[in-house]
Length: 305
Length: 326
Image 1 (cartoon, helix red, strand yellow):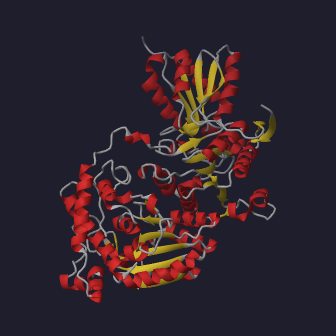
Image 2: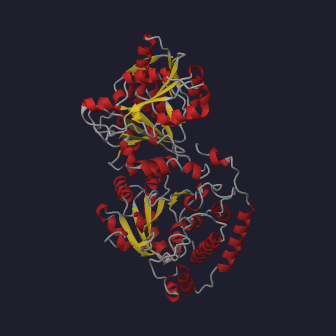
Image 3: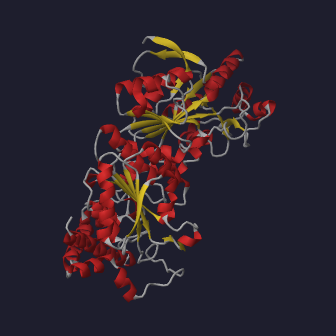
């Protein structure tokens, strides 16, 4: 992916997420919604290098990962609006986006619940002789759960070709990392297993791409696991509507320094892709609105395969 | 159908082995499953497909979910049903929901093999009869074989099913021998077995209690009371039709379950019978269950807590002795 393509991909996510925020306030998107504004550099730096047959698992903050992995914007928006034309026909919603056509295998709303699933994908790749690489996104809040340690141990024991991508935004839901652990760096958690690991500036999409590429090249050859810790900033609250009494908003000037999109634009001397992205988002919203709500028959039809 | 005699636990192993032979996507994971290189599964199928896991139920089951989504059919050996409780998010909130939440884009064909009910001095934490906790979980199937033949047939079906299945096998039945069909043998899910027919009362018994119910039915027959005995075999899906058909004929229902009474499979079956079959009932439904307590260690106390042949007979007497006012 060229630098301009990275920029375009980040703009698509940024404008999409801002629109989802508006639609949430307008009650067109209902329920619990978590936006990834500010974290576009990680989604794009990672997913931009993956193939459709590389399985990706995401979490409650999944929209950016899905778009970066290739999920079509109209059906994604329709899913968030609970429509039959949604990726999951309105059965999954914001926290459970799946698009298997692009290898976006699932998103879990329970923190850390997705990590071992990616190991299963990695094991499947090994058993079937494929060079596909499993990737899982999780936040720094997931790391303190037993599921993370169990998964790292198993992945290291079996040397599974999986890349664990931690988006460390310094906040686990509503409380800072310091309230959760005295261990500052997530990469330090996996030191006893000697997992190949790196902490990068997640607001620098080029740095994310470079670090991830190093791991991806090795994982393609069946090596693993790897841990990429991306230090990011969650510009919005934990969820849309979060009053965020627990922190001071960044000053606008400070954010402009950090913003992964503006940083890349400055570096490239590029004007950006905001307008182009906005046109695509407008179209996505229109197509989503045109899709009907699912029929009530669907409620029980898919309980069992 | 030609058969051979096998212990219940070996019948389960036979189903797993035959399915692994038939379908190379079937994997077998678990703690301690192959403790030496001479393990027959390891020797036959190799260490790619037969994998010893650490004592990490969450990662173990979660990894199986991921492998299932990726097209494999893992059987996870859990030994004790309670060990699933360590990993409940994966069992009742991940494995079972992915097919639905993805609108069918993914399937999660996997089996969690869980032993239960080991009430012979194993005390409070390895003895629970906990299948009732799983039967109301959307997307999950629950099999509870009572005989060696059903153990084989239900395991075969569990492995072939495209959904996550919790396969509960009873530890006190482990060495019970039975005639098991040779070769490929699948028992369909959601089809109760009518093991004995009688016109006076319907006894529905689950798992280990099936044998007790049959023995109680013999005792009742000697008194001149003819009982129908039904084994649902799977609790999800639950074949209420067979039970309701029988209740329509007998008008009386006794449900026998080794689990605690509150929130039990027995209570669900009784409620369904009341909801759908009220007009057939001539008497209140009787539940014969364990007491609502943790399984005690002491042997006589253990016995006191559990349903028994005598308690089933007593339950039937109560069902026959009372009747609904006209």
